[in-house]
Amino acid sequence: MHDVLLSIKQMEYSHIKKWIKDYLNIKIKEFELSEKIIYIIIDNKANMKKVIRLLDDVKHLSCSAYMLQLTVIHTLKVIKLYIKKICKLVKFFWFSKYS
Image 1 (spheres, rainbow, N blue to C red):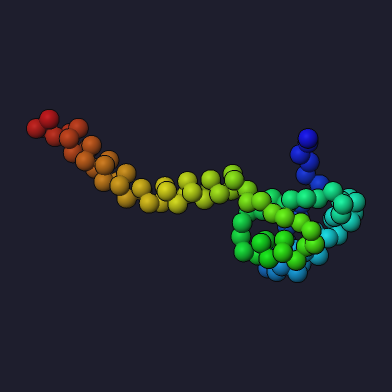
Image 2 (cartoon, one colour):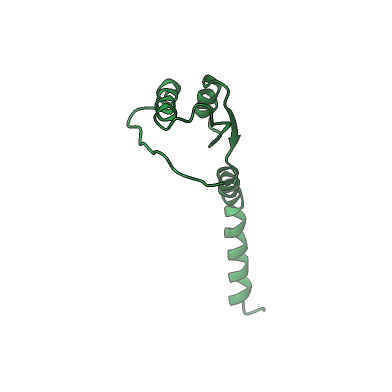
């Protein structure tokens, strides 16, 4: 099994599901993939889920790396306040004449 990037496109306009679907259909036909695609991996955003529902006979999988990245970013935001407090506490005891 091989992974290959067949196409990439920056969309200058809003990511409307119809435009994404049309672009995917063009590329599927261009590379003759209509009978070969079983799953498409997506970033799990609502617009991509809607696009996949518009495609015939294609299922989707959420990208686990993307989901892990979102989890890490959220967790870092949550613990940022605690890290600041702990750093202040460590500095207090490190430079305290009572330690």
